[in-house]
Image (cartoon, rainbow, N blue to C red):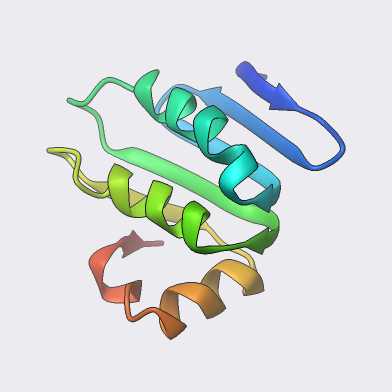
Length: 100
């Protein structure tokens, strides 16, 4: 199942190996939980993000993802939601992240 960082009505954050699964609302209130989860994945490993169940993401959520992209091994979006896809495209950040 992984290490649960947050589990509320608005947010779920789980670390499972090098994968961080995030669901719900990814906003300023969620930022600290998300950054905590990222810190649990060794920087020597490619961080995989499962964002399939993200219902809402704002600029604070985008900033957290872009922060992770600065890791030496980068970040890969393993799964995404329409909300995430739209914001990444709108912000012109889709090409900065590996996907698939």
